[in-house]
Length: 192
Picture 1: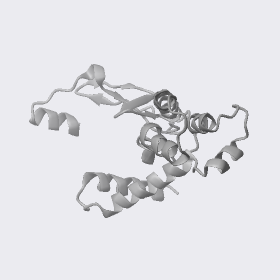
Picture 2 (picture 1 turned 180 degrees about the horizontal axis):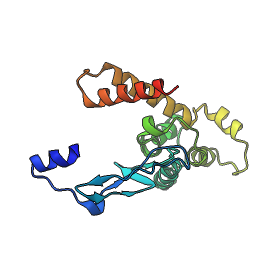
Picture 3 (picture 1 turned 180 degrees about the vertical axis):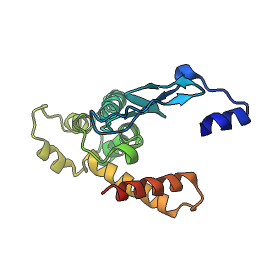
Picture 4 (picture 1 turned 135 degrees about the vertical axis):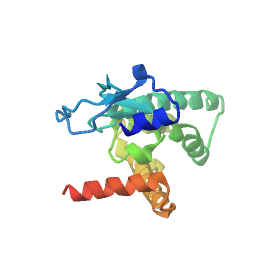
């Protein structure tokens, strides 16, 4: 109702064909509440894509990780095709290329969704390591990671989340992002 009144006041219209509700909850606990906008019933959706991130109702981000891993695989393939003609490329150059050409694709918005470990994203980095070392796909992963000294994608995501947390804390208190963050944090703490 509040949104409806605001839209009426500012003479804005809402496209009801593109409007829906996602109820973020544990699997099987979806609300029975009927949401309406100006007497139009909003349909429930299982996911919502916002700025390239898939937000699923049970908040597991598996579809998002799968989408990003496929895009990261394409970026890695493009990087490999460009460097294949060089006879030798140093490990630091290869790492720099990976961290600037592929990692930004698979790390996209990871401060929001990356607090879990996603095997499909790790596979992109493992493919890069295997390519550089020229080893078989069954080479043990600990040996690959030890040889390169690279951190796992999950560790990069945790660092991104901490950086974002610090950015939120240093924002002005009147910023809507910070207000929503603290509201959500208080809701979470009060439900324990």
